Image 1 (cartoon, rainbow, N blue to C red):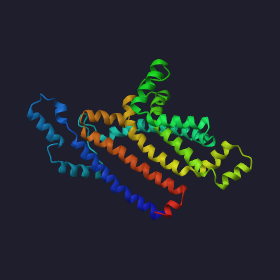
Image 2 (cartoon, rainbow, N blue to C red; image 1 turned 90 degrees about the vertical axis):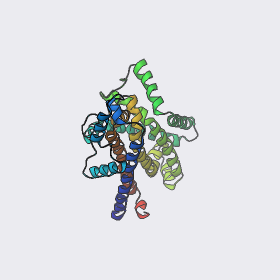
Image 3 (tube, one colour; image 1 turned 30 degrees about the vertical axis):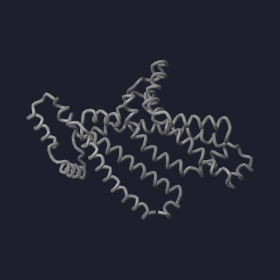
Image 4 (tube, rainbow, N blue to C red; image 1 turned 180 degrees about the vertical axis):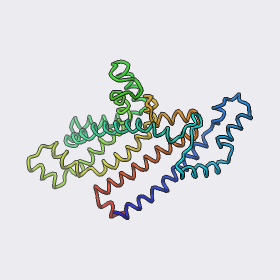
Length: 307
């Protein structure tokens, strides 16, 4: 277990280095001059050059990259071009909102998909099964930027049950969580159903039926526990996807998280802030995948022996 864990840890570093490099290059290759955005196109050329020098944007990209790596090693990811505040502090202040939304979306997805997936497997080829499969197909096909405004129109404007936007209590997180978690719920529903059906004909399932146990209990207690490995893997991967998908959802619902901060920074060409947001999301994605590998290995010791 220790050697496997060390190998997995060493794989983290080149992955994070690749993420850092890709983020830096993508941000600096985006068309647009942040200096002109800050000062306006009518600003004097001397003022533009002075500000560009102060921000270090007059240096070659290779030099900027080396300086950026050196600052990262010292724990400094820069300061915002517009607010002059440390990027790290701004990101830390926004993370609780993003984490709250991601956890709520994950909770909704699991609460909706796992019981329905079990029921669908237990009632294979029935009306319930076909209905749940249709719901999963509908959930996968609906993009966030369409579902979010639809929920706002129906449940906020017409019915007045939930706030339109913002973060202001339990009710305010429900619509964003549903918007963000719907696609994940659809994927987990299908995966739960197929994973349970794969073990439905095993001997221990027949033995549980022979003892006279309820069919739903057989699937939920015995089959599900042996079909959790692929479900756990997808949950871990989708949790990272929730963080990246939160960019659209947070913008729609004016949710004060990392996603909305990144969109605002992109519009303002705030290079350090965009780099910090993308690096934060990517790093979280990599770490979540690593933790998923650990959980996967703990559930199935064969994983550790084969790697």
